[in-house]
Length: 203
Image 1 (cartoon, rainbow, N blue to C red):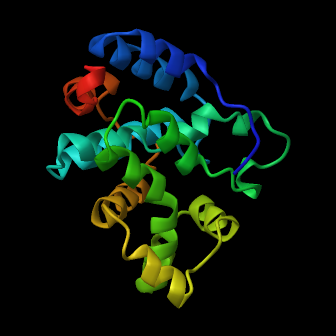
Image 2: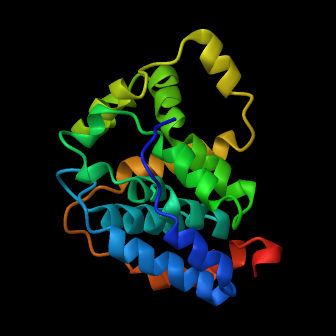
C-alpha cells in the first residue's frame, strides 16, 4: 500500500450529510478533482462519465453504473498528478484506496468491483490473447507497473473472488471510456443511481 496522504474532506462531508448531501458532496468532489488528465486523451472526470455512460447504455444496474462512475476515485484521493515524474511509473493501488474510502457508504456490489478493476485487467490479459492489443498505450504501460500477466496460481485464486463478473465487466467499460471529445451526460444524470446504492444506514 502506498504512503501518500489521502484527502479526508470528502469522507467528513459525506459522513455529516443526509443522503442527498452525500451525493452532492461526492459529485462536487468529482467535478473539482476530476480536471486532471487521466491520460493523453481525457480528464479523470471525462473518463468517469464515459465509463458510467457505457454502463448505463448497456442496461447496467444502479450498482454497476455507480461503480463505473466512481471506479477511479482513488486516483483523485491521492495526489498522483502532483507528484514528480510520471504518476503511472508507480502503482499506488488507487483501486484499493477508492474502495476502502467508499466502503462506509456503499455495499460490496459497488466497492468490490472497484477494488478489482485493476487485477481484472491483469486477468483479462492472461485469459484473452486479444485483450492486451485492445488497450490504450497508457493502459499497457500501467499494466506492466501493476504486475503484468497472472500466473496459474494467481488466476485460479482470482477466479474464486466474489463479484468477479461485475469486476470484469467494469474493466471492459473502463477500457472503452477514453474517447477524446465524446459528448456524454454530466454527473447529475447518475444521481438516482448513486442515491439508490447508498447503504441503508447512510440514506
